[in-house]
Amino acid sequence: MASIPSTIQFSCKSLQKSSQNSKLIPKRFDRVNFSALLVRKSTKLKQNFNVRAAVSDDEWGPDKMPGVAVLEEEEPTKELTEIDILKKQLVGSFYGTDRGLSASSETRAEIVELITQLEAKNPTPAPTEALPLLNGKWILAYTSFVGLFPLLSRGGALPLVKLEEISQTIDSENFTVQNSVLFSGPLATTAITTNAKFEVRSPKRVQIKFEEGIIGTPQLTDSIVFPENVEFLGQKIDLTPIKGLLTSVQDTASSVAKSISSQPPFKFAISSSKADSWLLTTYLDDDLRISRGDGGSIFVLIKESSALLTS
Image (cartoon, one colour):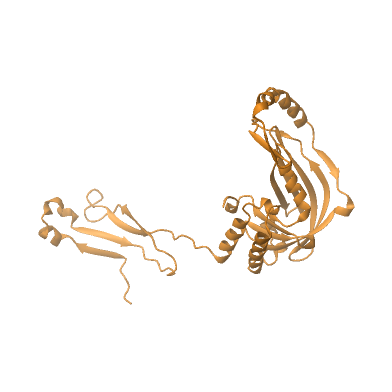
């Protein structure tokens, strides 16, 4: 197959002679250059092109030479890999499950199937040998660990209190793990954290030893907004009639919250019977981590900066 020249030139003189509008075409525009950047690409990728004007210095000089039309190929849209598709399907299946608490048996089965497929395609077969990938803050998106269900349900049961986030922060240089649960209310936010050390026991497994727990000092919110109603023990309570009263005590409540916020966090010891645990990482990449704990419990976590959190 003959190669295509990078520059195609054609004369416009015949066009000037035959065209009824030849007076509109200046004689100095007797040549048009088109440059095309030709790149061999996979037939699976869609090719898109842009045309831009470029300044050319030819025999007319910089002031007389017309612009040159340059045909440029756009950067191709990255095709989703099979792993990308599975990850999106997995994250999509978490919708409405409240991190696993409200998942139906059918949804749980679908999630387990997607997790099994991802684990079979794990791009990091030895996660503990790729510790930099483990570094950073990971947000819990789903779990089958029944030990967390009371916490998840309690966040919705307490009036005016919301469970905002459950996260795990790993520092692979110092071999530390910090688990954190963030609560928010109309006056302040607070977090309960546990600090632990971990040891590498195999290419996939780490042993975790919890050292202490911390109840963080409540942080006063910038503005206090009371909702129209709250749900408590399955009943919706209308707060409109007492909204005036709530507003009148707002200043007093703020003063109390500020006083509490000035106190140091409360630390407590973790009993030795609950201090040791282990974690098996069965899937790991830049933005998704799947781990299995004691009893086969599943934890799916997403990296804090990942676009999966907004998908």
